[in-house]
Length: 335
Image 1: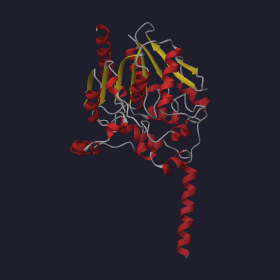
Image 2: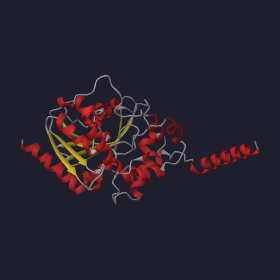
Image 3: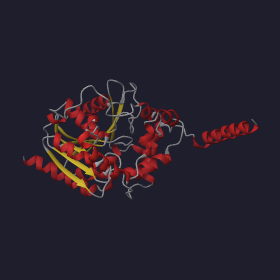
Image 4: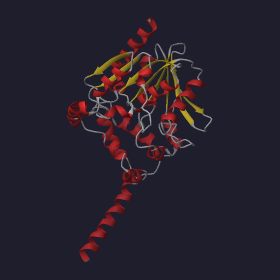
């Protein structure tokens, strides 16, 4: 009995010490906004009360290109492309609800419908009748979902390591052998631990109180394929924006899967717009094996695969990836 009491006592002490040393409160929104907004930052208050952070940069009379970031990221992920594409195109980037300097929104709605409404609100506010729409990862999903809802607005899509419709990741009997090979390839890569933990109820219950810096660093190194662009500045950018007052709670309150479960799977084959599919073959988050499904489903595709890049190719190698986007857009203008 004494041993049990001592063990419980030690466990309680260790738990208390962990709480003291690992606990981290939110960073005041004003401090984060001052650090990560710039002269190009604008804020749109939507009808539902959401204050959306966006930037409208580049050549103002050029073709408009709207770019949507991935999960846990922000519009800052597109700045390397903005510097290059902005010489010829008008480039609009924005922070989705629960992300960046948009962060927590009054409606507490952070799913696909809220993302579509946010993109629609910003593009309407800017008077854009037609534009090229692109996105990375979750932002790729937001791209094809918006295009399904408003096909007349989207001239072309740029899908960068995009999430697919949920039913694409349920292999049938004929695909099991290919799926085994895919799993072997993915095991060679270090997974993003944070994404796995976010699916666990116990972790989400605790995560709003603990410091996520170590998980963020591991996740970024994995997602960026150990690229040298993952330095302390980039890690702190993710960290500060996630820890911005209200944002951590908003992220944790989101549904387990952005794709969700729907009664009817979206039909991407109706999207006849020219679509550029860009993928890092070393992606540890969304496997490159999904590329053929996009090619088979979308009727008008151009594909570029980067053998040495990971999940965030536009930051890992901005020059090379932006060059391919320019070539795709120039081809559109000559059609």
